[in-house]
Length: 259
Image (cartoon, rainbow, N blue to C red; front, side):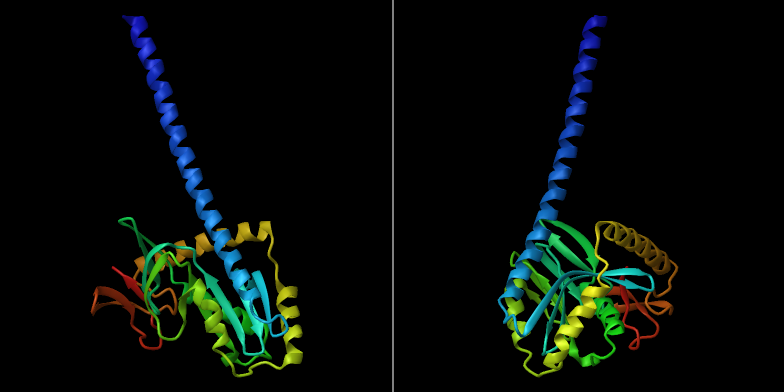
């Protein structure tokens, strides 16, 4: 009887170990799949940008620039004479819902929901960093674009920043026809961005650590009823789609947070 129990215990231990191993493998495969999709999305955007005339549109990819808080990472920067296009790519499938001023957007897929940082706000920070780096470029020469893959369904209320599919990116860029930058300055601007680029494996690791720290600090501020954008007080408001918290300094500050 004792031997039988010992054998059963051994089998149970092996079964538990196999289940744990299977879960780890599934988790790693999901991570690899997500990473592969991200790389595929960025590669696709790179190919799209290469379709533009090489003598007029200069693309720069994977740009990491120093900031007062650490670094900011930009997926793609296009430098044509029609302006500087700052492109943020998000490789999320499913329904993408959010607003231009909301702090977070929502991905809804297969019955589950996941929140992520508003990419319009992210790109605003990218542009501010580029404007500091390139003071000779007028403010109205910077354009923000947010891109999602074709297997997503964009349900975003945004009037000032284009939120489009990858396939629409070329058309959006080509729609800008006014000359904002002198042709002779294109190479200087491109060189300035490339010289300031500190992208490396080590800096990417530090960048992610800084992002996680910043997220926690922001969450603590919101929990304390403080606007993480301007330091104002968060007040309860009633909107078309339910209650939410908004900054008391509206409309100067348009920060919002869901309850």
